[in-house]
Length: 360
Ligand SMILES: NC(=O)c1ccc[n+]([C@@H]2O[C@H](COP(=O)([O-])OP(=O)(O)OC[C@H]3O[C@@H](n4cnc5c(N)ncnc54)[C@H](O)[C@@H]3O)[C@@H](O)[C@H]2O)c1
Image 1 (cartoon, rainbow, N blue to C red):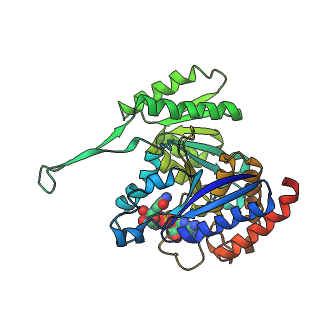
Image 2 (cartoon, rainbow, N blue to C red; image 1 turned 60 degrees about the horizontal axis):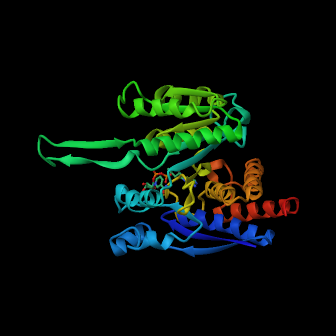
């Protein structure tokens, strides 16, 4: 029996609502598969904690999380706490401290009816974005000089180290090679004359070690256009922190919206826990109403199972999501259904259980 230790950070707004459904799925797996068990430890960190304690997480929070196999996070951020505080003092702190330098964002259309793009099939929208997750434009480096004075100057510095750039690009080549897919690098060397010229050089340099991987290189503006007009161009994509953040929201838009978008923050060396989260925020406009779509959070569980080496469960979760996306009445209102968050989770577990005999 394998036991995986999972730290839960449900966070703010709809975070706890969707994480509860993800945990329901994990508990179902535990019931269905005698070879797997999970232990859960919940941490109350987020904006409410901030308003009470003046900090987003406990001082020894990172130390506390170190011993877990994975972190499962809902969403952080809520009106009343500035977004740059909630983001930097919890989410980005965890990503940086645990060197989760790979962000994996699948852009996969599971039901053609969900894309706003005309005449695009599921085969045409099926790729993986690998976003640099530890430095680049989100390094947090810069300065704010002469604050409030007429000569005020603000500097936000992109940081592209050789180590950081090489390791994300190499990870992407490895993934393309392993899965026998093409690799596209997205950058902007014409305008960003240091960082992106360097990025392109490293992409070419590392590529020499992977002669069998077919590569493409696009400027981010052209790539944004192709995400919408010709998503079939992409199979594996590697890009910087900021470009990846923005492009993957286009990816969410062409595959069914924020309620379906998931992201894994991976420390490939497994020296620290990796973190799994739906990409959406805390959605204050719908929180507490019981109508949040938990599918993105459940998709994160699929990524977590893949990471644990339990790919059969990762795949099973994905195919149940696909099945549910054809069952309109079981979906939440953002996808045109009438179910509540909890009802969707219950139905999900029912369908997963129905498949388990093929798996265990
Ligand atoms: N990873 C994170 O924790 C994360 C990511 C993005 C935003 N945020 C934070 O969340 C707060 C709100 O941000 P926002 O409004 O820009 O983005 P958001 O993702 O919370 O919401 C955008 C829109 O999508 C809808 N939506 C999002 N998730 C949904 C779901 N699961 N089911 C149904 N509808 C859903 C919301 O109702 C809203 O209309 C801010 O404080 C922001 O900083 C956190």
